[in-house]
Image (cartoon, rainbow, N blue to C red; front, side, top):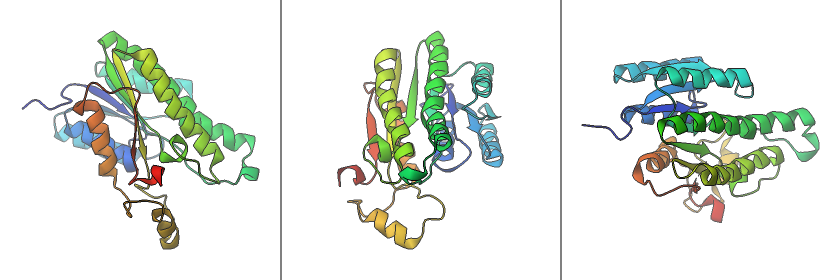
Amino acid sequence: MLLPLEGRVAIVTGAGVRVGRAIAEALVDHGAHLVAHYRSSAEGAAQLVRRAAGLGRSALAVQADLTDEKQRARLFAAAETLGGCDLLVNSAAVFERRPLEEIDEAAWTRMLETNLTAPFFCCQAAAESMRRKGGGDIVNIVDVAGGLVAWPGYAHYCSAKAGLAMLTKCLALELAPAIRVNGVAPGPVLLPEGVGEAQTRRALARVPLGRTGSPEDVVRTVLFLLTGSSYLTGQLIAVDGGRSIA
């Protein structure tokens, strides 16, 4: 039976851990060949390569600091060895809480370079490959924070994610009709490491569905954007239990 993503080459950034890894696993399971980007999670990326090989897919793990032009180029060169990029999921990100008065220029620059500048240039490189192949799909993992609502203590993070949300719309216009660009904005799906019970209760108090989500909730939405409808572009889908409307 032909799988929905059979033969397509996917790049997933931040594929070694958390939601990025779950997305990468799902794309492989649905037939895609994979370039699994990681920065420090080498074992997670290696496990993805083994999973893909067990299913008869081609896969490469590529270590890169995506804020570095030459290292980004390695990622897309790897995709070319598999036939060129058909799908790009920008999942790599950094996240931190820092009060306004503690955000110095280095912290601001690091946040925007990782969460906005790097995804932009990844989209640019992917679009070049996709145009040669006649089309493709890009999904940006944004966040409810910044993408849809403001959070105190996260001005630099929210600003970067708000920029990524708008970038998604701008690229959807510029790259249509051959390339579709959409975004997914997770809410409390995987809470940051170290979050205690009291913090979890406070977070869930603003979620109408009253519970955290799971990486699989995000995965199903990404798969819907890639395989469920070809008439969607420039959309940002919140997977947040209603947090963005509360």
